Image 1 (cartoon, one colour):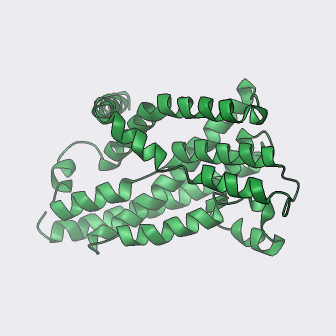
Image 2 (image 1 turned 120 degrees about the horizontal axis):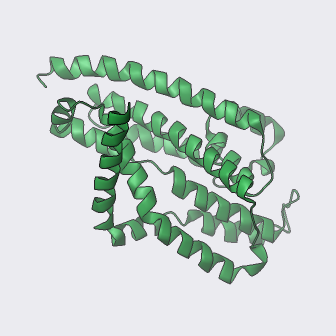
Length: 261
């Protein structure tokens, strides 16, 4: 186990050095995710029409929390995995004494670490522009948020990684991710607080994993919700998609080997 962890730590350090070579590109990736701030401006102007208990400052805080959360849970493994399968790059990975999933996870963790200074800078700029939206978290609330965000990341990672497994049978699995991402946007609380949805719609949304990937960590960050049930549900979704992923991985490897890999 210690040997395995050492290999993962080496992978993280290698990918971190690699990510630092592309700092300008990482900044562009972050700026491409400013949709929450655009939505914030829209909802702040509409808050006098549809409030549901939300003031303009509440919307400002909410969408800042959405932006921070999304930076921590963003996933792109499906693009990497599809490319590795199509080009045959997966074959040398299979010869190494480590499941390729650790390589993809290390790349994501390293990218998080490399974008952290830019994220802090953007948050400081935000509070400079909107000083009334500033709020403080206790150490406990910050730790609980980080736990929720990392669990949400793992759920989203294994959902996308499970879709990636279909690359063993299809050539363009990225198209499936586009459909999944649309569902993620509208059902997770990304485009609007779930409190603004009709009750019947909200009950349906809570049956999916999407609100636990954004709305739940956001509410924790805002100090609105620290419920053990949310972590239990996140853990349940993680276990489900992890097991599904392992099943698809085993079936996919048999097909990959049959193709001459």
